[in-house]
Length: 344
Ligand SMILES: *Cc1c(COP(=O)(O)O)cnc(C)c1O
Image (cartoon, rainbow, N blue to C red; front, side):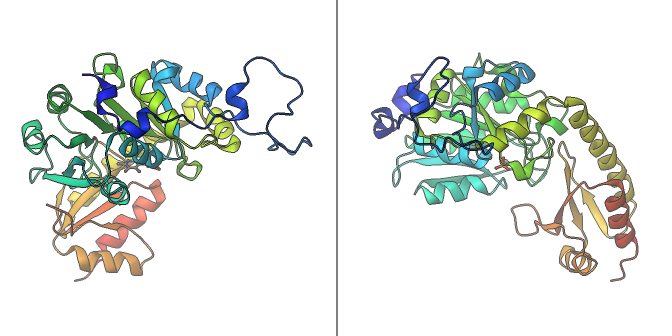
């Protein structure tokens, strides 16, 4: 596959904005090139537009070359950029599963890109052929979320690979929840697949949702295109510094993940003993999709108790389902206790 053929002509022909720090390479001591205020505030200088130091650390953690990494203001920035690079507004379309993460459809709508939805099975499993059937000549992107939000399950890796291998376009795999899953990340297969973009984030396992830092991993060629289209200084200095200090303490993240997984198992055990719970969907993430006998009443009841969960009863195959994020041990006990005390 020739990636350049898949790119919108205006993006291919774009001369990107060239910042002062882009044009300078070497070791300067006196910086009079960017109209910054020279007096030290800790933030008076522009950040590194390519976040080199941060990418070095992420590269060694993920075993991916730094020039295969893009960093965005949340994964949401990467989702939007990918659409703008590959999809012609008003003409092109993307294929996504249903249900899945809501941002793909919103970002597509903002960019006037048609969305083709393919229903997952009732157990939220995924068949490559169902998705590939929807592809037409204007389909530029397929989004696959695994583990999937809001169902929580990791999709069958063999089926995912089948989509990548049989689609003549770009496949985006959103791995926001991969750190909670037993399944291997597709980052290990980047060398094999030129048409693959993998999204991960600091918002979930890393406990840094407020930081707004998302990662995309792909071929150097696609990363170059993303760099070309992004706002020059899209990751601010504070975010780069905080992410570096989080990366310096990987044990802390590992511990949080193992606590969350242990609590997830505890919640499954406790919730499955309740008569108001009719099904708990298998989870490879930090949340559970739980079917109740009457989700609306439970949702309202929990809200009155100050416990906020996500109503997913209106999504495809989500009848009577609430999505519950795994909390701290104390929060989880409160949730279970409240549900035990529920009187219809
Ligand atoms: C939470 C989540 C993200 C994270 O988005 P950020 O913009 O990085 O916070 C991405 N994808 C999915 C499926 C999510 O659930």
